[in-house]
Length: 457
Image (cartoon, rainbow, N blue to C red; front, side):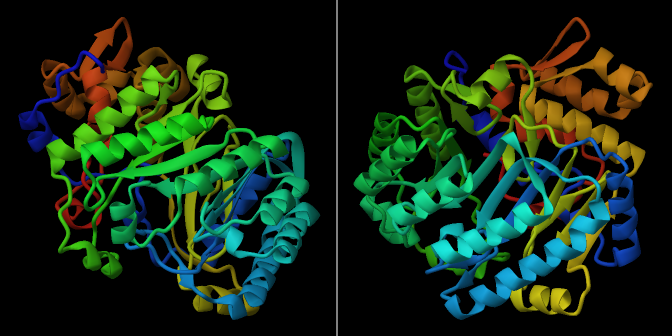
């Protein structure tokens, strides 16, 4: 990409709403009338693969305050709700685990939020103990947690490590004081640095820093200082996400409407600056928005073509089923998607009544499975091997996607795709617009995308 010229005209042409493709089909296509029987059928199919590992997710929605940019499902200052919520997670585990029995092996577990370290050490031990009661963590399992460097304590990090957590992610977003004030953050570079150093001493691997570009008041000078400060901390991984300003979906984001935000060319310039600085510092580009040191597991997985992607992001673990617990948590089970109720009280009420707290879901068709496979290959490897596709699905790639060929040829003329042998490869230019290219294979897109998805740049 270093030699690729990204013009303002290209950015204007392709900066349009589109999915991030953490799933396909995307969540707006899932059905609100997906019933309990369909859920039971999905779990029954999954349990038959008793030797296959599982990936687990727990959503901890609590935060001390809401950041202005946030698009997560959070509950604010709800200390009085923590005990009830953990009891409901325990009850959901008790309902779900038997539906998967005898399948118990876990290779990936992730606590997200919200801010999972809102929980005190006692609550952490209680929750992790519940997971350990029902599932068996493999010795090499990836056990990860998200946290805020301004609020997590040393004792909490020591507790997490004692429990077996070995991956940690710090939500930094930006270190520029003006940007932080605008988005309601208050962490310092020294807090982040101290947290990373402690985690390294404790034996955490895959230490990650999350950054966001496109935030209000971000400018190249301050952003460069942020990137250089993060590089100096030498985390194993850096994720750089595009800010999605969607006040219609997240009303609190309207507080940022009066502040200047980078336009598409300025926004891309911020990403390009960060990317180049990270590459120059020895990081490898992973997928569309992640970077990792070559010796990190993500870097090694990329080099051998073993990278995977699920709702928790890029991963080296290949568990065929992901089970989500908690309010708004998502499960991917036996080619079926399920999402729990988003409202914490509604979620708890359902669990307390002994009901699966599923709000919506979708059973994937064969066409959905085929298109999901292609989209994930593009997102993870920036290529699709047509022969591998045909061996897996038993249909000729070009014939199956004959209607997409015109759009693909268009991207070829733009220099974003090339055909090498029987491989469809994304060029460095095309990697910038990978979400746009994936949209070619999306059978569900329509005019609603203008309202429900973030912009691709």
